[in-house]
Image 1 (tube, rainbow, N blue to C red):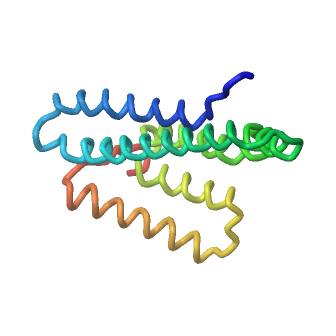
Image 2 (cartoon, rainbow, N blue to C red):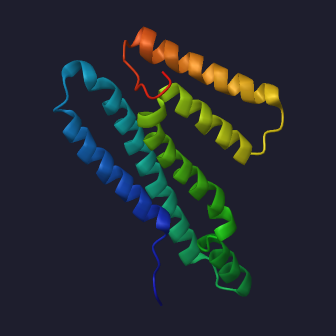
Image 3 (cartoon, rainbow, N blue to C red):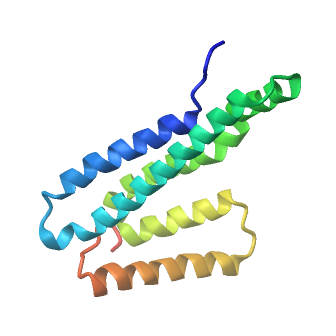
Length: 160
């Protein structure tokens, strides 16, 4: 009988290894700039461990469960990813990549407005007030956080 390892085990181990490697790399950062990355990497490590244990639980559960048509079809449904489910995440990934490239041409705030409006359209938000709240609120928050609080200059483009 062929023993299968659940995908979560592989993903969890990958996250643990990546977080350990990046944590060691973050030791080379300046002292004032290493705190936040280390906190994020510790959290990533903990999630990787949790995902690994969950994958182990799923592997043991699937191994000890009696095999029947229902169990086989449930396992097959869990492992099959339908294209319909991947469509929205793939579009958001492409939009995010375009957003990063647009920042250098149009500037941070203009690109952020375009990105947010596009994402909200993709999510089929209908109320104009929700668009305004999201766009204006996000830009004000990012401006206050980066420009005023952290004193970071944001990329400027054609407009500002």
